[in-house]
Image (cartoon, rainbow, N blue to C red; front, side, top):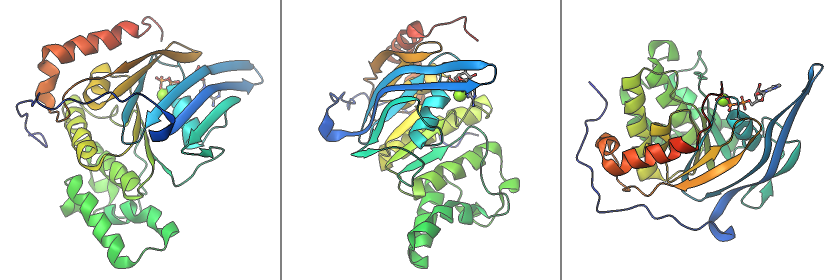
Length: 276
Ligand SMILES: Nc1ncnc2c1ncn2[C@@H]1O[C@H](COP(=O)(O)OP(=O)(O)OP(=O)(O)O)[C@@H](O)[C@H]1O
Ligand SMILES: [Mg+2]
């Protein structure tokens, strides 16, 4: 039984594509390049990336394997340094990690010795927050991810999907300006993955986090996003920026509609296949 049932799609409200401009942009990536150097030689992972993410926008990055998606996300997270170019979050040049960015990885990254509640609370230590307020935030996010009963459980007692829900709650509970997600659902079975997509979309509709989401799955990207960047094969550059003009309130039945299938095919046509 899934987390949530399919409902009839409401087409009455449409997401608007807002033209990018300086005033409402949160993340600016300009002429970004990354060259990995080793004794065997150098690899240009990304060549000249330009992307623009607006406040409250859900943006996906798709492209062939090895085109530099994780490298791009890790540079925005400040976990990797750029060889050239610029990353600006609001008016700050990014030169390292910071609490303004939250990250959710593909693999499960919870602290195994901490309970679910303490995992979600982890970032609060840096913020000197009253205990009562901490509990309030933890409880709110446990409710959002539908794991209220697991507050005192340990990660080993959770399924993969449950662990990723806690990882998302932990990242969101820190109120980052940008949530960075690198294939967060790719280790899950197809049914759990769809449940997670629906939950993620509902979280976005309710909380409006600004999200940069990396995925291989075009259907997932179209379902979740307001905008998709397609990268070329390595070295990655932006091949296409595609606005996703689908209803604001989305559920899984949207995937069966003509306009969804059309968009999925449109994005897929830009992906360079045959590259592994
Ligand atoms: N630490 C590193 N040292 C050297 N080369 C690296 C390193 N990390 C990534 N690369 C290379 O950079 C390129 C881009 O890798 P990256 O992991 O960013 O691709 P990706 O688009 O995320 O791929 P996938 O879809 O398979 O996850 C690849 O050719 C990879 O081999
Ligand atoms: Mg990757």
